Every structure is written in structure tokens, then in C-alpha cells.
Length: 514
Ligand SMILES: *[C@@H]1O[C@H](CO)[C@@H](O)[C@H](O)[C@H]1NC(C)=O
Ligand SMILES: *[C@@H]1O[C@H](CO)[C@@H](O)[C@H](O)[C@H]1NC(C)=O
Ligand SMILES: *[C@@H]1O[C@H](CO)[C@@H](O)[C@H](O)[C@H]1NC(C)=O
Ligand SMILES: *[C@@H]1O[C@H](CO)[C@@H](O)[C@H](O)[C@H]1NC(C)=O
Ligand SMILES: *[C@@H]1O[C@H](CO)[C@@H](O)[C@H](O)[C@H]1NC(C)=O
Image 1 (cartoon, rainbow, N blue to C red):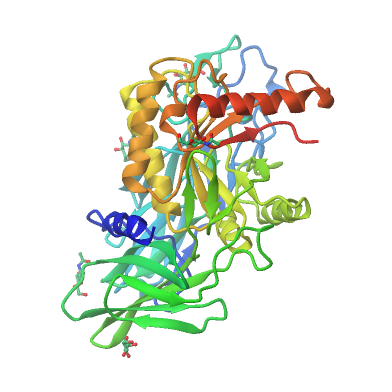
Image 2: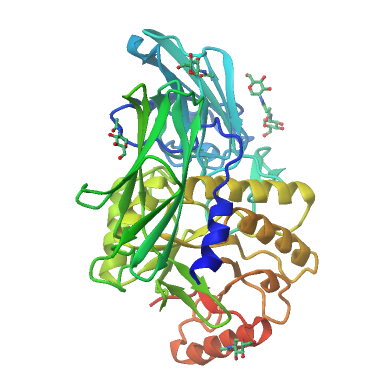
């Protein structure tokens, strides 16, 4: 077992050319951070007043918008709540003089859906998938020891080839209106934090970690990618335990053996769930520390076949939820009280997992899942795909590449979900999902892939390509409403049919909970 899993793991740790500062900012003695969260100037670019509305409805809303926050529910008018098109966010900020010898980066946690960023009138970056981070270097663009002006044009128009899909039409009262088939309100805006941070000229650009277990040993295969490396740079890698004590120090190599490791276990499966080690990557130039990155990781192994799914060789029984990430006023804006409340409720109910239905959740929630031992079925924003096409396929693959880049080292991520309720009754969905799953496997073979399917097992064409079959059923909710005594057998017999058809593990990915 050790050899079979270990060899592909090493193979997977080869990087593409990396100069993107792929790692999220983490506190470090060598990196500095400046938050751009707060009140930004805000202007919808084409706010249309409904035809025949009295003057009293003229928009009195402040031209200010909190970041992070969706903008929809912050105003008073329906035409902002249901706005379709572009809005412009802007603000001034200072960059300290002391940063002028550093490299400076900007990072957005998520903008829904597309963003076009300029600083001091110069183009910085464009990005077009919501719920995922993006950023770039701005060393040559910002003014040091002086004022800067950032402008972000945010557009929420969805099409047949965006992830997710959507459209627009002109409503009866003359307003450009969004349309989409999914059943939840689709918020827009700068939903997560915006930061500037520094790195040294030569810096740690990416870290990837895969763990295995063999006998009494945890095997940690790692790769650290360094940008702009010179002969004078040395990488020192240290493993720390949860008490911040050094377990191992290695200055060369790609594999670390840890004797009698504390394994990463899910909540409800162990008395000390969510055990995290830290891989500390220290970059030294002529003996001086120039960059440090502390990457948390857990030692755990996932395995699956046609009848079970195990963690550290114990079968997993997933109990949990398909969640949403929104709340009053801020919409999908990062909301720490909500995050802690939700985790308190999850633990109180004895749940051990949730699916990030129907889009990737914030990095704060994911960090907590790692620490608390909450297992995550991590879903790309491909909700209710209806029509398949090549451009959609490329955007869908890109959404996974970005999600994988963000979350690859997270022990909490135990399953990738490549879609929610796609039209898998169409035969063309088969080859489409075959390509999506092949793309996921080209990046990660250490986690199984599922999709939350709403079609019946007779009609479905996608299950052949998945590792685990998930089905959404609304017995007692949309169907047989309230008749709880009737639904158990219906669900059990359907789960059996899915298993007979595909000979794979089956789970329910959405159902009524009472
Ligand atoms: C993004 O902004 C730049 C600079 O303002 C502009 O030239 C470019 O056309 C914009 N891109 C899109 C897709 O609107
Ligand atoms: C502004 O809205 C009107 C009607 O709602 C629409 O016809 C027009 O295309 C929009 N313009 C832009 C630039 O989005
Ligand atoms: C690479 O590092 C050297 C030495 O620190 C620095 O002079 C140079 O500007 C860096 N190159 C890039 C592309 O940042
Ligand atoms: C780097 O690691 C080596 C091997 O453990 C150690 O001897 C050396 O002191 C470390 N260098 C620094 C500057 O920490
Ligand atoms: C798993 O597959 C094997 C080989 O096809 C089969 O013998 C076994 O019965 C399957 N397990 C279940 C639970 O269907």
C-alpha cells in the first residue's frame, strides 16, 4: 500500500512555473500586511429607475459600500438589490515608504463575479470567477510613502459559458434583469477581504504537501517552490507540532518521516480531532532569514473503493449539511460571528461535515474546518449547469484549478464536488463530466470526486466518472411534504439502485433535516 500511493504522490508534486504568489498571506516575521477592508466609494454604473416611478423613489442611498460585503441588501432600493451589470468600487490608500525595497502584492479573497482592477490608473488584474481568490504583484505600480487610488469594476452578468450559468433580459418596466435557474439569491460585490502584503525579492511562492501513513510513521511528501532563487539562498524546512515544538528539521529532500504521529481525525471520530502540524519553510540568504511561511497540514490518508470510503483506514460516516454562506445585510460578505455560530451549531448537533453548496466558502471557514476536524466536500461554483459547451468546460476546469490551488493542503477537504444538480439526463453530460473529472485527477489523485446529482439513477450519465455517487432528494420537502414516515424506505431503496447501477459508494448530498 505504501509504494502504490507514495510514488504517484511524488509525481504530483511537480510545479508549473510559479511567479504568482499562490499562497495566501499568513502571519510571518518576514511579511507585512495592509488591509484595504473598510468603506469604499461605490457607484452602480447603470442604475436604471423603473419606468413611471414617482420622483420620491429617487435613489438617496449613500455612495459608500463596506468591504467585505455583497452590495445588494445594503441600499434601500430594489433596483440595487436586483442590479444587473457593472458597479465601480474605489478608495485611496497609503503604502509605507518602508515597503519600497520589498515586493508588494494585492490579493482579493473573492469578487462576484468579474473584477477589473486598476491602481493609479494602471491596469492591475482581471478575474472572472466568483468565490475564489486572485491577486498579483503591484511592486512597480504603487507609490511608496504616498497616496494611491484603487478602482475595481465589478460585473455580475452571467452567461451560458460562465460558472455558474445565467442570463439577462429587459423586464416590463425597462430594467436589465438577471436570470438564473438555481433557487437561492445570487449576491454580488467584493465579498471577501482585500489586502496588500509584502514578500522579499526572493520568496516562497507555493508549498504542496501530501501525507501517507506506513506502520508507525507519518510520511510527509512536500515541495516548496521558490521564486527568483539564487545560489546564496538555502531552504530550511522544519516540522512543528501543535505546541510549536520542533519535531524535525530538514535542509534538503522532499520527504519527512514522523514517528508515532498524531493523525488528523474528524470530529466525532476521535477525542482530539483536527490535529495540525506546521511545515515551516525558512528561506535564508547568506545565513539571514529573508522569508518564512508556516503551512499547516494534517497527517491523514483517504482511501475508497466500491463499497467504502475510509480515513486512516476507518470507514467514514458523513453526517452534516449542505450549507450556504450568506446572512442579513452583508449577503455573502465575510461574517466571523456567523462562521463561529455555524460551527457551534454543527458541533452541538454532532455533525462532522458539510458540503460547500454551491460555491467555494471563505478561507476563514476552511481554516476552522482544518482546526476543528470538520470534513469538507469542497464544491466548485458549478450549480445547475444546463447546457454544455467548450467555453463552459474551460471555465469549469479553471474554477477547479483555482480551488485546488487554494485548498490543496487542507486535511479537512476529503471530497471534491464538481457540480450541483447538473442536467445529467442529457447524453452530452457524460463526455463533459468525463473531461471534468480527468482534469481534477490530473491535479489530485489523493481525494475522491463526486457531484450532487438530482436526476434519477435511470437517467443519469455522469456517475460512471465519479468516485462517489451523491444524490439530492427532497422527499418530505418538495415531495411527500411532511410525511416523514414514508420517506425512509424510498431513500434507502434509491440509494441501493444507485449502488447497483455504478458499484460505487453512495451518499445523500441534500435532503430534508428535521
Ligand atoms: C479593464 O480595465 C482596463 C483599464 O481600465 C481596460 O482597458 C479593459 O478594457 C477592461 N477590461 C474589460 C474586460 O472591461
Ligand atoms: C443600462 O441599462 C439599460 C436598460 O436597463 C440597458 O438597455 C443598457 O444596455 C445598459 N447599459 C449598460 C452599459 O450596461
Ligand atoms: C531577484 O532578486 C534580486 C536580488 O534580491 C533582485 O535584485 C531582483 O530584482 C529580483 N528579481 C525579480 C524579478 O524580482
Ligand atoms: C538550517 O537547517 C540546518 C539543518 O538542521 C541547521 O543546521 C541550520 O542551523 C539551519 N540554518 C539556520 C540559519 O537556521
Ligand atoms: C464491490 O465490487 C466487487 C467486485 O466487483 C464485488 O464482488 C462486491 O460485491 C462489491 N461490493 C458491493 C458492496 O457491492
